[in-house]
Image (cartoon, rainbow, N blue to C red; front, top):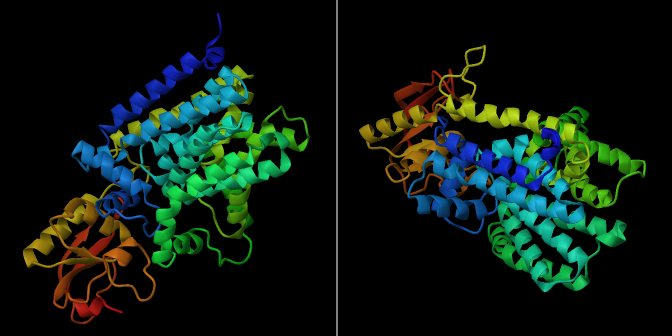
Length: 477
């Protein structure tokens, strides 16, 4: 009889484990005590104001959340987050198909398991982000590419282009795919696909991406400028080796320690020219992303999650290796499962679990509701519109009181610094008093204190927000 470790590479067992994971994530999410994170609340707001682009991201997440919450008839945190675990299960299935096509079904089962249990997926099945929409698009494009690599096909070319186009509307990190494909085409003859199929895929991608490309042109390159300046920091100078090393070490946490070790082992084999077939192709589609972002970390900084697209091909590669070593596969899955179990237990007890210093373990995701309630009460009692500078305060106010409260951001002195300054700046026609909420000093001598709120717990623990009755003119540049 096969051991438990060996049975993990059986497709039926892997499918049952992934089904169990998905049901666990969905079931525990119903008892989640945390509030929406600032980005999630902002994505929901985008969905109430549909457009072909937004300040910091392309538009697919807005359309997706609008569709989900409209169908559910609710904009609660549960419904905003619920589709994450389903999308990741779909991505795991696509990774299975790719690995089974390149290697065999046991490799497919191992790859799907490593992906589905990866810490990045566990987190992405809770907090809803653009990565959660990007990854199934990326995985679908990769599978379609593998089919095109075997034989020309109009259908698979269209599917690859459509997946990349939707991926572009999810997050611009999809650009790593054509970069990887171009490099693979140059270096590996067997990686090449027919020019007609590549051209058809490219045209399809551009047609789907065109509305967002045009939106960026019409809006002065808003999203591209934000990504280049605030994320990539293209104007940064100097070197930061510690940041690059931190990024690399963080990938053990993002992908899982055993899976990332298998990825590094494959890289070492490739350097020594002892890698199994298809390793080079998979490394180009994975290691290239990690390498680009390591350089980005060396120049300035790189967030750990920016490399998630690497682990579509990376999961296939790690799965193929670890399927041959069942005990290491079992160890990797069991290590990942500790977070699969622990994270839901933590957010189901978010209001009680504390660190030794007394802070709530999930304090980043708590405390907004009480502050927003105090702001709303003060605004209603004084018949004032609200102006707030902090993005987190604005995000929660819009989500909780979108139809009951008029909320603005201070007008920018130059290019807008966030979505709220771009779309909801305090308009010139508002000339009377407003309720200005800040954790700093009053904006001018004419501002009068009419309330305050000190957060005893949560994200703003120990921070006092003062409510000022302020002439609108004081808040303009």
